[in-house]
Length: 88
Image 1 (cartoon, rainbow, N blue to C red):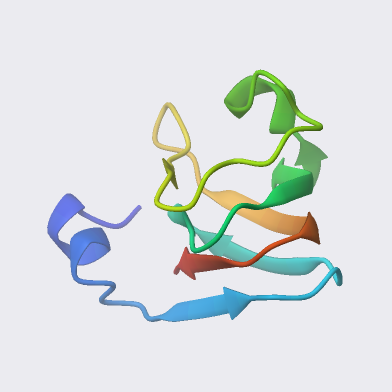
Image 2: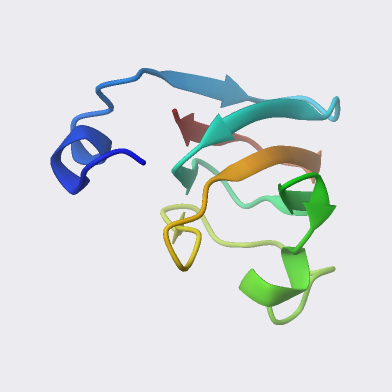
């Protein structure tokens, strides 16, 4: 697992998701760049979106930062609309 400092400076790089194709990549953080509706947020290939978003059909506002719990990494993300930055 990456250290906090490595995550903060995006030491492993970033990837911008701005389409509706699922992006499968291990990543530590999802930064929401514009109001975004998520189709799926995955850990270990399992959709855990409802563990991180209360109203899953509603847009998450720009500027939100989503971080996995318990030292895990996200394994994929799929959007319905919007764009996010994955911190790898």
